Image 1 (spheres, rainbow, N blue to C red):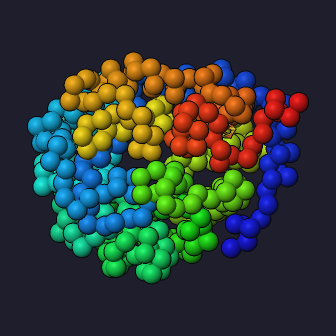
Image 2 (cartoon, rainbow, N blue to C red):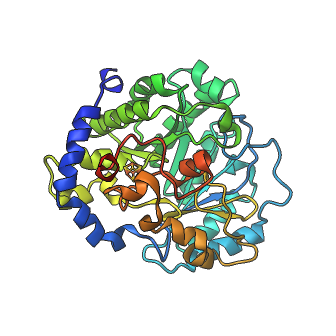
Image 3 (cartoon, protein in one colour):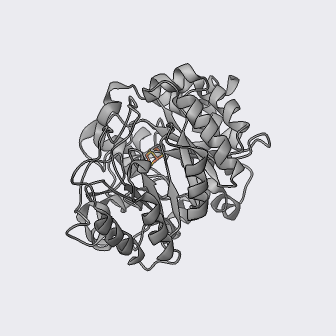
Length: 389
Ligand code: SF4
């Protein structure tokens, strides 16, 4: 597809100059409190188990065949659900149950039922395996999940199955996707962005256009866990890809929302493209605008299968454990989370950047690359004006 090879750097540089003289940086600063999630996260990710029948080459969880004997028990998981409710935010944080494969927990549906009874909205990311039967999908429907998410990393079975490490996963995933949509459950498709999957993304887009999904979430690889054996896309490839994603997100042929994970500079590109023809209010009300500011530790918290609390699933710096401390206290008061929420503590070009309040870069990638979670995100090509002069 032409968009993936088109060079946008000159247009974006010109737009960045326009940004320097626009009202937007001042507006971001004035509305900074809207983009800072000090009291409660928007999203709580819970790695219910690391057990999974797949053996994905990139797996953050380094998934295992068997459940860890020390993962949160049913009683501990229930107590953890109460901790989420204790944020007392309106609305409450949305819970995403992930893994591993959450279906490996026999108490999964009873925990969803319990969380729903506490007033939580809950999404689940089951693995695309033979366990994802029409009966199980019917159970998700009856349990009242807000949405389900499945991973698709190739447009054809050979590529997806090689990535997921098990023959048959592509068929299970596509059949599962069709059954989920037929049940009327909103479906998100997750796709890993790596040097290996990059060329296949336009074909994956064509496949998922036909599935009736509500959201395409692209996860930009952080070299961690099994993923350290894969290659990230280059900064130039990332710039071209994010511009292409922005263009297809605006196309009437795209019947779903597009979201990126650990590529927050998509927001910078979206602002650069939008400011030429939209008002500030219109920009803030787009799907990408509503996500401004959210990044590892700011609007997001991740709880591992052992109860350890991290700023995200890709930033392996623990700040406490829900077995010993309140998730609310850890999120609000830990020095790590407070630093990650403060764009003035960012260093390098992210610290100089007029987009730092709404973007702020991937803290996980900065940590993976430098050992400092407040350093610059090396995947972003943008050079703030201060570094030119
Ligand atoms: S330099 Fe950092 S804050 Fe600015 S757009 Fe790039 S990643 Fe975001």
